[in-house]
Amino acid sequence: MQLAQTHDFDDAETLAAIWLNLATALEGTGQDDAALEAFQQALSLQQALTGKLHPSYAVILNNLALYRYKLGQYPAAVAALQESVQIRRQTLGDAHPQTATALFNLARVLIETGELAAAEQAASEALQVARSGYADNHPRIGKAHEALALVYRAQLRNDLALQHAVKAEAIYTAANEVDPAWIDSIGQLLEELQVGESDRE
Image (cartoon, rainbow, N blue to C red):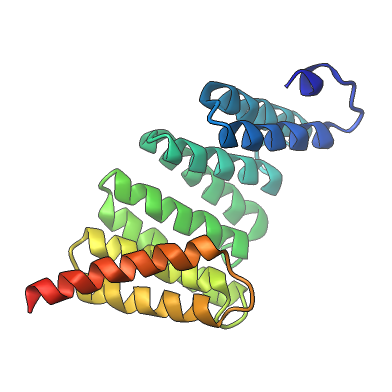
């Protein structure tokens, strides 16, 4: 952190990126207050450089929101993600893949705040945007299906949840490259949903 505070970088965008990387590193070591401070520094520098209406500002907001989600700070995470979605719509367009990413992140956090109708809307839109912005069966399309599965599970609509979870798993399995954690998470979700189906029989 001292390097980021004291080094004279001519490129403000480079310095913002350094603060963002520092925030991620601090997050990984569990230094919550320092990580949040670093995220705020990155946001301030990016805002000074480009203003808020810029994709890079939206990326920092998205990452900060996911960290707040991890810390259980759900209302703050929702607010940051909603702003990130708005910025991406205005700067990248409604059909851009980054817009889809922000939407399915928003859907997952809205589940935690109990705003299930809004979560369903965000997840459904994420799937539409992902389908228009990515090649067929891209893992990010699977991620949108997974977000919908989580929403429907929260709504106790297990049949729909299971349908989307199966689609997500099929996409992840067929993909050339996918985060192993995504495969683990969808496998766990499928197991929970299938157990629920068995209990109803």
